[in-house]
Amino acid sequence: MNILELISKKMDSLIELIGKFSSILICFLILVITLSVILRYFFSLGYVWLQDLYIWLHATIILLGVSFTLKHNGHVRIDLFYRDASHRYKNIINLFGYIFLTLPFCVLVINYSYSYFYRSYLLLEASKETGGLPAIYILKFLIFFMGITLIIQVINNIFKIIKGENGNN
Image 1 (cartoon, one colour):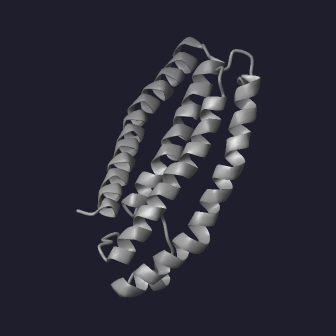
Image 2 (cartoon, helix red, strand yellow):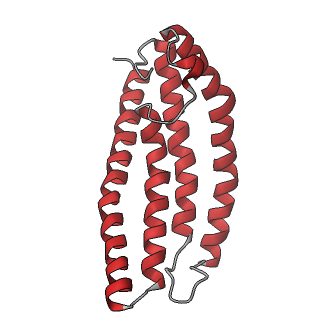
């Protein structure tokens, strides 16, 4: 096994781990929302931090799950021309999309989200709501992290297409 294949396997393992962690968070999200509903409708209690928590969990699940979804070819696409196309045509379309659309998007997300996160971190930014969660910069960091994991998965997919082993079609 050459070094590129080893790196590709490690990237696959990393994205799988992140995706599984994201899927575990879904259980916590369900519990938090259930608790919030029970407290609100049965006990007339509402907590801002609890509402913040389920919004943060939802955002975290999405931000961590983007690259995992791409790895497993789960993103929505317009199948008008793609569905019945040959494997070679699908690879050309995917390569075009990765190089000219997804990679520039990742670069923009990484570039802008880092300063967005860093400014928030320096200010120790918290929720604007009274009683909300502190450390909103953690959520802003996840935007940056999503850009990193997505670029890792895109590079891995490009490598697999070039190598001829991409089974994501």
